[in-house]
Image (cartoon, rainbow, N blue to C red; front, side, top):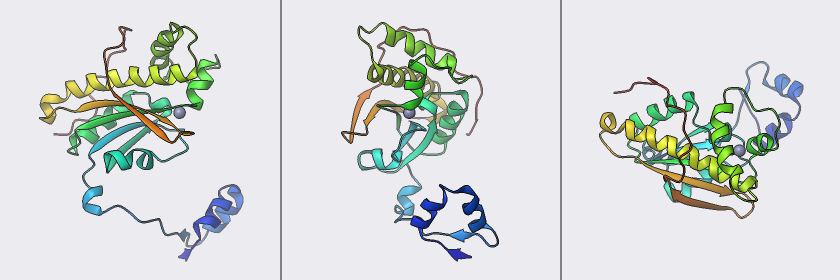
Length: 210
Ligand SMILES: [Zn+2]
């Protein structure tokens, strides 16, 4: 197998035909950067539900504050049924006592939907309650939508964590985090009861790991 310079790979991903040609035959390998200590990597201290369109790695954003994290990503960091199942699994298979819901300013999904463009099917029901709340904020803008959506998801995540309390045998703190990629700053706060907007029920079942 050939070794490839990661910089060369970055060029190739912009030219899929060339990339596939390069990967023909035995394929290629490249060296990753330094990896965390395996003993630490095996025991994440937090599980993080993050938006999938952030331009920075969640591990890099949260790592300096939270240490090793187990990362799950979905559009808008929305707590979809699939994400619920993944969070159940992540909490059941680690000792993490913190669950972070990480939203970010300038989120393209939220910007797209807040502008009234077609919303992705399935995500509609998860977006609308937070959007309704954001519309009630005088002069509400995209930053408000990002924060309200993260808080809405965090409340649902907290309900999930509480429903797992007896099977996990521990409490899990749910934290709202908003990342500003211009200021390189993360703002943290606790999930709160700031809204009475009706929430869709959590999906039944999910992954059962005992
Ligand atoms: Zn986003």
